[in-house]
Length: 332
Ligand code: 9MR
Image 1 (spheres, rainbow, N blue to C red):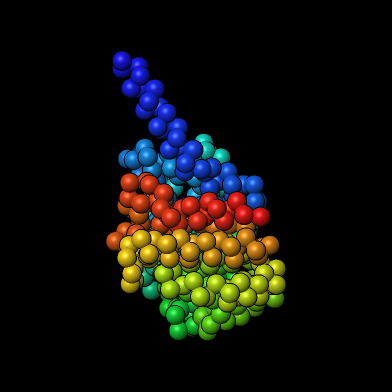
Image 2: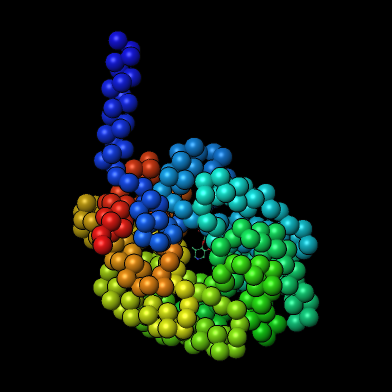
């Protein structure tokens, strides 16, 4: 008798697996696309399902927090690589690429960085951090977000402790290239997916860097969006195209879609699926768009958990948005 129950359960499991279809990473690999997720390494230890879904569905990981300055260099010259190393080991074991995030950002900096340094001191601090961090993972990180969110929502450069060093941005890219010549180096930002003043400012900045011979390989569009985003898809394609013409590789780096707005829950889930589908389509149609990354695995651990922005729900069940990605990856 017990044997029958087990075989029934096994069958149900097989049916469920068959129904949810091929994993995203298998489909993406066929298209020459990498599909990624932001990861908190502590969850890899705490939650076996988190680790299983991540390894099954994605072929790229990015540290959601553990490779930021505040996590790595808590006091000057003292580096904590434990959590970042854990992520690197997981990626190797599951044949996943790694994106490093991030080397120059105005947020999540350790307190000591606000110590009122001179330009020369800041240059040493920046160089030592990049040499140590990028050097440690040399040959094992495919992409580095060297610069994150340098341009503000007013389309002007943001205030940051780095700015005491006038050419900090250019220097950061050069130090990163020297520390790992094989890693592709990125500028990453949000709110620049469509055409507009912020996107124009980023375009001008990156064009200037390219013209100066700064080692910049690509641009990341974060795509933290909401249910109203879909009309912007056409403009997004145009926008990506102009960055592609600068010779840059294009990545979608942090996508999530807040499930907030009018309508029934079912309608909102469908809208959310449509937004994911449209952005993935824009990426697939742009020959230089090579990476599509979600900012987390399940709604349970999203930075915007209350607005359920990801493609797996808090119980790791695939949402309509998951099936939209799956179908889109299968379309010619
Ligand atoms: O998801 C990250 C969250 O856990 C952190 O508290 C937050 C700190 O500012 O950073 C979040 O990730 C950000 C990413 O590093 C850069 N782009 C925007 C992301 C969402 O805020």
